Length: 350
Ligand code: DOR
Ligand code: ZN
Image (cartoon, rainbow, N blue to C red; front, top):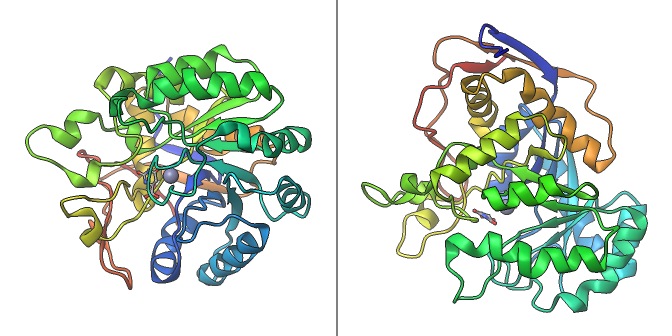
């Protein structure tokens, strides 16, 4: 029975299980856009230089806390950037001391600031074994980087070439396949019954590759993994609205200045923090599954991470189109907000 008649929804305050906050002026400008609606977020470590040690994670967390607006409560859940030189014992200490919640695996060269990522997965095996032992999740950017692999196939090939062998070698490791974009990834997660979950972004539920390339090139829809064909988007929506506990929200909200987006070699990343909850509500409502937004945005993530859901709640109400800025100003320059291409009727009440 579709829940289309609903015009109000109260859910535990959501969390964002994949977020880029950057640093400095950008951090100050974008953090309030997330802390307005979200209680916690998994913070990506791909700064320049990357957050590779527990010491750097502590310092970054302090800079984040200093940028939280007055009156807001926000808990950054820090991650360590995995390199071939990562010390397993530093990772163990960071987890035990509550400094880092997860470790992030970027295959070297896969995306923004990933040059120090992993080339030889055998080299990081001792770290992964410690993580499996202590129950610390590995967040994975799941794309191969070989130039001969078509960019639209890189996620599917990663599952076969890297993820399956890796999970066979370290079966007790908890893995989050981040920002999944394909039916292949959805099927892989559904077929596994232990220690595997996936995050889905807001934008991958809304755009397909035509949005980027048809009728002129649209840099503001360019992100990694790149959006795939429509059938894959539909598979992602089905997974997200299903209530299946293995799928949850990780927005991958990734701000870049207008200058860095609009150039001959523009940056990958879509900034969705300001209107993410309204976009998601629209998608879930259109699928007749608005009530499942609670599982996707508020319950399934904490469950996988072994954390309690948030105590307080947010209420969304359906009405006239919500207004939101097309850009936000930052000390580094303007950043464009994601344009879903349709009106958003669900407002998060203050
Ligand atoms: O689109 C993306 N932007 N994908 C990533 O994996 C990284 C991110 C960023 O840091 O800008
Ligand atoms: Zn990301």
